[in-house]
Image (cartoon, rainbow, N blue to C red; front, side):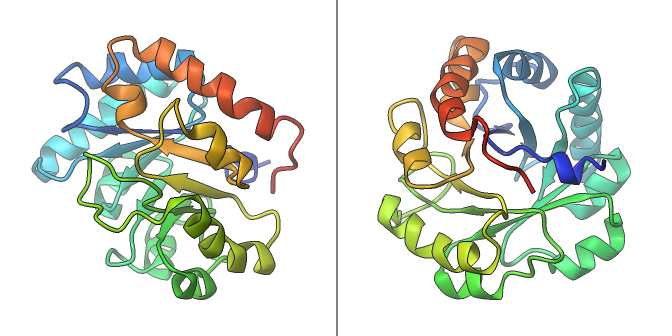
Length: 223
């Protein structure tokens, strides 16, 4: 069974160099995984390419014994150089078909989806999950048009119609105070930055979130 077939987006940690209180990336990742993170993305909008690759390799090393996949935000070249497990791309990044061609069939490719039109057009045969957002306002990204839970459900509906078991997550402004509501609305997982990596106790924050989302994913069939 491939890693893609076992993909679990229930607690999707996104470690952003701008939102981790300048603490060591590898230490934070280990703590997050100990707390229950099931998928990890490295996001860095400011560093140069060499630094991105070095950090990605550091994070990948920290994840080695955990089995938690590492994805790189946007940068297919960095994912390839660091031998990451895949990428998460947005609507203005490399096309999913090109990312799949470069990274190969075994790579995990996630896609940000913001509108029903994008959901209808998403190439589900080329990607492994979608994250819909931004659900709530967030400090980690300019997100003036948060869609809320009802908006999330509207965008998710075309994806559910096309492929009922396709993993669909939620992103932006999600933390322990609202994660349950998002999962109740039908999300397969929540993607979280500050709610994990800006907390004083990263392990405890991840554990709390894992306990919140687990009842909604327990026993749920995975693609």
